[in-house]
Image (cartoon, rainbow, N blue to C red; front, side):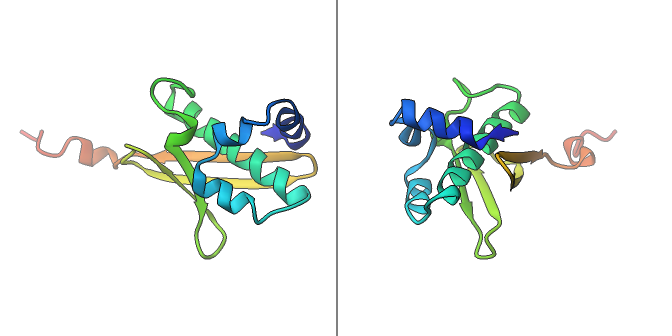
Length: 121
């Protein structure tokens, strides 16, 4: 969960924040938004990328950078997350309510029985 106003304040203090956290394609999507939708988009992407890094267990840093994570939209509008080098299936949900954005990221690994494939005796 992230405060949209807090992200707006960061944008005012750090103009390079957008180019730090958003990929080029995400910046193109952002350019089509204005008003509250602009800040909702930035806060949503920031929150979802942070949620992914936490679900991964590493945080943003050596293992994964802001630019490694990209969230675009399916034709239906649903957010679709891809991560450079990530093979697991990813699920992301982003929702806005009032001054807050809530995100959930699930990293789906293979079913438990596939991990033991070939190890049967």
